[in-house]
Length: 69
Image (cartoon, rainbow, N blue to C red; front, top):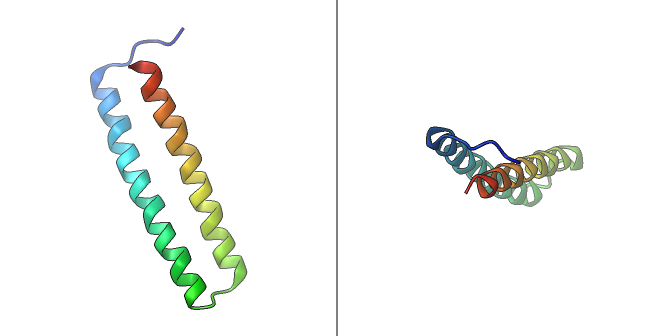
């Protein structure tokens, strides 16, 4: 059973989600730019890995919010 979350905690989670989603979109742009500039594959791989980690955190927080609804 999940412990009820206070509304201010939900708001903090939502704010964090907005921030993470913006970073995720920015990384999309960065990856496209890196490809266009023929950037080293290691750099592109690091960007993609960071994007993946952000996505995992986004999903975790969205699930947490859904559980608390």
